[in-house]
Length: 343
Ligand code: OKP
Ligand code: ZN
Image 1 (cartoon, helix red, strand yellow):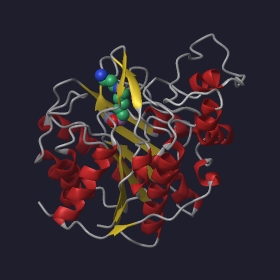
Image 2 (cartoon, protein in one colour; image 1 turned 120 degrees about the vertical axis):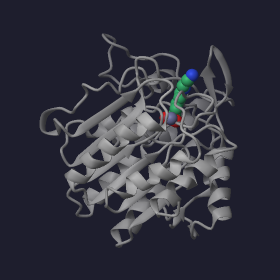
Image 3 (cartoon, helix red, strand yellow; image 1 turned 90 degrees about the vertical axis):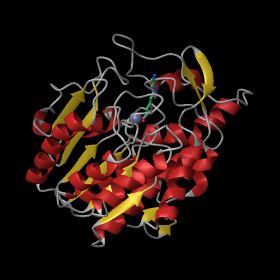
Image 4 (spheres, protein in one colour; image 1 turned 90 degrees about the horizontal axis):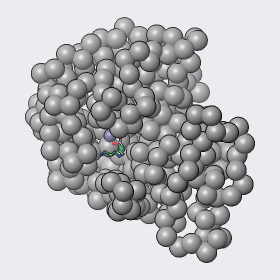
């Protein structure tokens, strides 16, 4: 399997507000380095440097003003004399006004964010655009007639919606790739999100559309981040009714029960007959993940890959979360090898 990877992700190394303290993000550059090292070590396939795309491609799923904000936020922040990371600290919840974009950068940061896990740093924009480009290259490669590809994206994307960042995510790489398939003649794309956390951003982007089926297995939002999205009764709206499928699962879920939902999800995706499948590949479902609560073992990821292969469609794997840095390379590549029938 071909891997797309751009080392510019190193330009983003941020802090987050966590447990009442500003500390380094769990989402570190070292994560992608570990996965890349494992790709090399296992001989998974060639590694290609992704080509660059224009902002318009990201604006197919994000608003133009949000993309512009991401591009200019650091400059606006440093114009105030700051040199440290910018973090949002005020949000337009419930009855507060969210119809007027604030002019001050402090207001903009809250306006375009869902939490304080998304710092803007000097290198953030460059890293996030190259991450989106990585996913776009992967989809182009599928559209050339190839059966699979691995977009080793960092930062991740699935919490980012049309107009907000959150949960270490800025541009929604998987959504941008899915939309690119449709823009190039695809009729239907399915996105299967196996990250431990619900892909609220991806769900939000395609919620009222039937041309993208979004399916997610994740920790029940009653007790897991992002808390405000991912319940079973979120099934889509309008023309998108029935094209959004959530499988919230309890803390402690192991492969035995995970596999039941995964198998159901894969059958539903197969029945949809997608032109392409995008996998939001988070491996924070691992038993030792420091911020998640499932109990999958490294061996289980081979079976996950085999289940995904059973869908029988061209498949783009897009890297999302996974924070047990010693193991994420093994676990992510196990999925890819399981998909290829190697275990
Ligand atoms: C991003 B991705 C848990 C805090 C959660 C944010 C997690 C973002 C995960 N104690 N903080 O979906 O892996
Ligand atoms: Zn996650």
